[in-house]
Image (cartoon, rainbow, N blue to C red; front, top):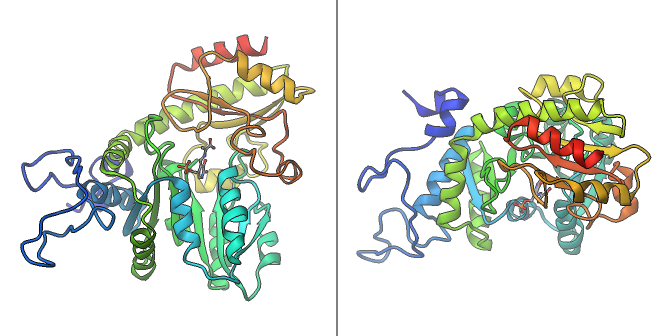
Length: 384
Ligand code: P1T
């Protein structure tokens, strides 16, 4: 039986995994070593230096490839360092078309690091795929998509973007952090590269920072492996172990995140003090049909705006929440609340961020896997 032919809920546990060769350990040992003994120069057992390769990281990389239906997985020190490796595929003068609504740190990496090296970024609302085409010219090399977007929960039609990308012979990279492969598998829809902040749902327990890339194509994988080793932003063995352990329960956690997400979204949308709730599971969400067709459920990320909301109103609510912890990040077992304008998206200029809807009164929730009744009770008291 090939472990790569298993159903998703088995691949999370077995995909790419074998008991450890030395003693049959079912979980790979944390190979906490920087280097490996050689019998003669070049005479080693497959590993020579832990920046280039480490057995614990390798076990994680094989799991990542398996759950995203890819061939090659690469694990990095953080989500941003995984993105950094993708942009290093490009050369000065190249152009990128990116989602306009995306994690503030991704925007900062593009604008404040890579623009200095002569790479140009266009930010467009990709709900209308035609807007991407308007920005494509001879210098365009890459389309960068985040879907669902952080924090506005727009859903982008990956098949349509992949078709456009193929027509123009571009690379298509998809940040699959919010959805995870439990909900959507971009490589199956035509993407070339899947990226994760594994810090979030893949790790799942708010105890590790790690990033990932997954690809199918050998030539592309080789270029990325070269950058991973040459630039050196690798994750350590302990962090690799933690994410590998997290992935083993991804499917059960995601199921509950989705159920609780639905309960919280439906509670909020019926609340008299709430102006607007952004969650792709609502039938009147502008991209609901695409969400239904490319995702298996709608996830546990929700943003909302209180009625007549100001910056102060939003701050008052997040400060009053008790079970929802006010914190950056998302995707852990515990529920978190965030204020994007002052936290995760503060590095995007106000004018730019408001164009995509990230107003001062917006609140973002990462709905955890607690009992939904307790989460709703917490929101009830905070909104009272
Ligand atoms: O934090 P890091 O592991 O480097 O990943 C960056 C990143 C990339 N892409 C998306 C969609 C993300 O949400 C993130 C990190 N986001 C947060 C910390 C946040 O609270 O939104």
